[in-house]
Length: 537
Image (cartoon, rainbow, N blue to C red; front, side):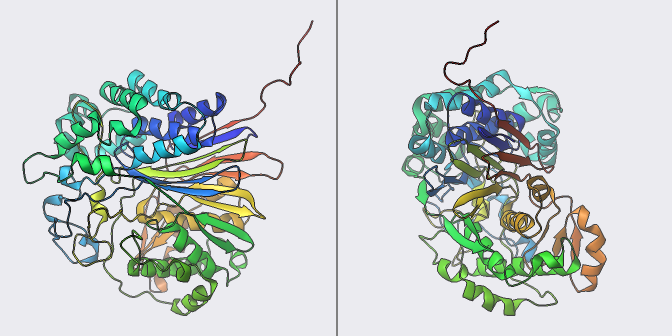
């Protein structure tokens, strides 16, 4: 807790970087960008400058700005560039030779660096060089490999070993970097120094961009069709937030291409018709209700979701109270077979930051899958995204590939207000499990009266209409839910490390991090002495 600022990320050095920016007079935007850049070093499996994401900013004057830095398809990309191999729900997104998953052809136009530079330029306070410095320091001096990173390396060891640059960094001596060992990223430190000097243009048209394109254009069947012009022409977009109302609270989230603002509001509108608190937390009745509103949200997401420049997303309809009451008629006792499911990687990162002046940032960014395309650009240390995995590999679909189209996302950097004052901000990694998990945390806080720490750590459930997933703490409910006709699966985690900040009426801010990642909170209290104060003996 602290009154002068709070930073929460999913790695200690990421949090320390943001905290450092607040300590030297920066604001929440400076802190968020510094934290995210540092996370590209210490969470290289999750996020990078050649990735994409969404930042939700509430400025001290009360404005909400959403910076859309999501990746796009390149100008030469087409709806038929991949060959699907199955129409079965679980393999619907799979393509021949995994071309949309691993290697150069899986890489979409990155947006993270453009987005971070845009938000810093417009809303930050410190010189950009200062904001990049903690990331350079972490890369050049090295950091201790966490169990979290070691586990990610082991999970995709075979693919990492196939790329010489990746193998050199992540598999020293042919084995995964051990927990506690020191990982130094000298080449990436040099890349960050170039970013420090040139900003986003270093990647979007400059030397780093040229190196990336050279790596991707292999001349073989795995080659990408991305060009330097794709990088140079990419622009991050500022969008207006989606607002809803739940039991007297204002709920704010990102608009399309993100699903969260629309469908979190939709789900809460449905829940508002029930006495959720009286049902109790974790009861069979409440879990069934949550599963049904999540299922309905996914039905509508599949019907109309994606880049609003390409898809007509009926935002006003989906977020209306009247439509929510109509949706109640779709709640049922037993599940039925659903449409093929689209896929999003569950591997990303999230930061939540607040400063003493009233600026708040909730930002979710990624390279999509663990280690993105699982290749590294020689001489740069850059790991590019595999965002092509998020498009439907078939033509004629709402989420089919088209030049310039932004990838769909479930990212949910959410905020809640009461009487116009910030109440809490939160977010998490987890692909399609993100926005239902964020909704459950909101319900935990508003309906069940949980503390912030309880809300982010509480067990979660998830479904998209096929099976239902339960975290271990819900295991006692498995039999009862299965008896009701559901296919229930117990899973280790649903979504990733949630982190959040709550705002008290007395000006105190409370941060909370989650057991599902290396979540770390730092808060600043106290402060500088009043003018004229001296200590005399």
